[in-house]
Length: 323
Image 1 (cartoon, one colour):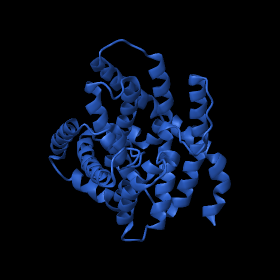
Image 2: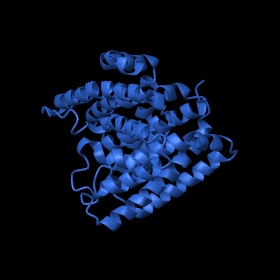
Image 3: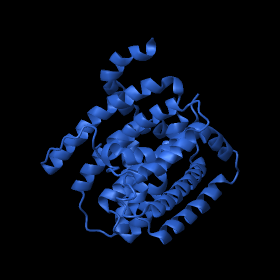
């Protein structure tokens, strides 16, 4: 039996993913009206999405899931590169070294699944994950390559979801005033973000301390603050999404096709729609386009298409877990 509360939370989060990408492509971070909105989304939405991904982890399926993610990563990485070549007129082939934009999440799922399998029985999995999140900032190499920065920085949220996610969600579902708490909490988070003016690159998690031009202590303290605020934000969004009820469960069931396919919609619409209107109207347009994109891509046919696409690798590799 599916967990409707979990599906509702996934629906809310995938909408924020799509909205964040529309806002970033169509308005950007330079406009004050969109900056705080973008920063709030980026501070919370991927940590929360990864937290829920951890909740869905099942150790018995670890190898099958890794093969599934590889089977989707390779064709979609190529499709995005082709789309980029058609748009820019330049062909840049990078299969694994530089995942195209949102494709880093699939590489993350491969790495997080492997990590969780190796440390599934360990009581120190979260401790090791936090050490890795802080330690990657000290690395002398480019943390953007192979998405190693994002994979390591967001690892604790996957472990948290795996270890404590269901307990947290059940507790919030039992709270009568969870939505009120979520609304007040979100307002406070936005106020903190508005006051601190932190660079968006901290929320991307893709750069080392040296790349962010801070020393070790500044980097470590800032990363600690980011991890804390994102963790708080996860609770906030889960509380808020309790108010969605069961109206958006279809979207929650089909978040993967929305995630993988919405990038094409965002890229091309942002290129085609060039309107000279105020940032506030553009924000409204981005909300409308996000709703339409989620509504279209949530259809089961797209999920079935992904399952069929993955068979090129999943089917021949199935012998590995059927022994």
